[in-house]
Length: 461
Ligand SMILES: *Cc1c(COP(=O)(O)O)cnc(C)c1O
Image (cartoon, rainbow, N blue to C red; front, side, top):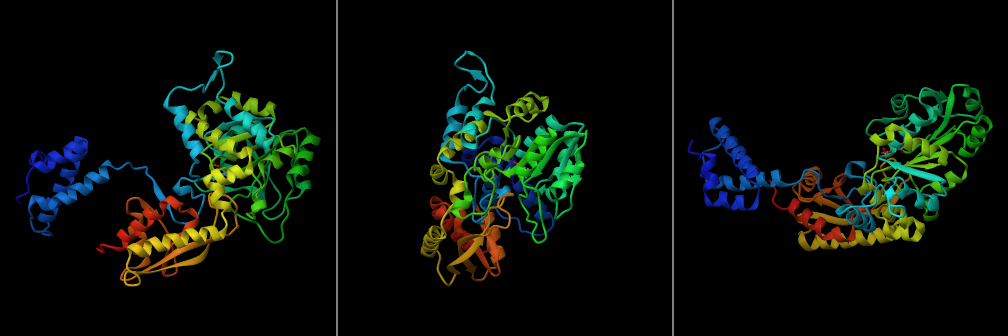
């Protein structure tokens, strides 16, 4: 039991070296943890008492864990473009640059430069949404769940909101329309059935208590077979007849016509706004490809009431998000520019051949570093991926992946080793192979992915 006290390790040359590189508390903590573990093992007779030096690599490993930020970059090799667990939309360069420009110093976040007096943070979002989505007015909050909540609370607190049973959506992370409705203080008036809702169902539900007609986009599911629902145009006409506002929760804010690129049949925000709907809500970090935000666009009368709701203060968007959002929206002024500059849009519409080229390039770099077929069998295969993140349900995107079948290791073990590497590479298992889907692997990540794979296939422990 001849392990040294913590102090002695710390005072030794190795300890001093660590102290020169890392904050004292982490070095101390790492040494303490490793010594404690070693003592316990010796006591339990598990490990012979080795010299202190044998513990250095363990201490170093622990220091590394303690000094690595918890929130960090990972490489998405799943092919799922809007992976909610992996942070949804990666930001465009323009968004990132604008975030730095605006946040590094002071900004006119709530200051009207023209008039030299207090301004409103919401004005920054208005101009572009008018331009791109033909919206009379717009505002933004923390995320789309907050946007829906704010809209319901402002327009229908204590009153009824008519929604089709086929649209009572649950989005991952416990966002459920009935629950959000309850939280907002509005009363849900469900109509129709799961598969069919008719205009007459809406008609029958409207009464003196009705404050809002709400349509919700079926973001992450599809009802197929014997179905019907009521179009937004019909609902707008109905709302006009009864003088009741109509809101459409679009979920994904698709600002360009993805159908034109052969991807899905998502409603375009501008078309929905032009249908005459009073309010639309959508996310900033789904198909839009910007930072997490919830955008509310529509008639000034309603948007202004929402901005004045005290709840808006609790849900308000910060300057970094606004800066990223404005720069992202700017690229939508021209659809070609959006496709070129916004990573989410680019990945969604990328031609299969272009993805295959990148998969081939990745396979080639892998083969340079890894002995094939002794260590692993590596080949490019056709595959399919999805948009993810509650967008484009049921739409399968043709993709290409590098398939890796390791020798002497299960694909699941390889998946784990890649995941626990630095940086973490998140891959998928299909049958007996590990797949690295090139759709979500950027050109400048190829070398890194190959190096991580080499390491993961290497030292088998
Ligand atoms: C995703 C989604 C939401 C929630 O949006 P967040 O930005 O994730 O808060 C709300 N409604 C619909 C229809 C959605 O698809």
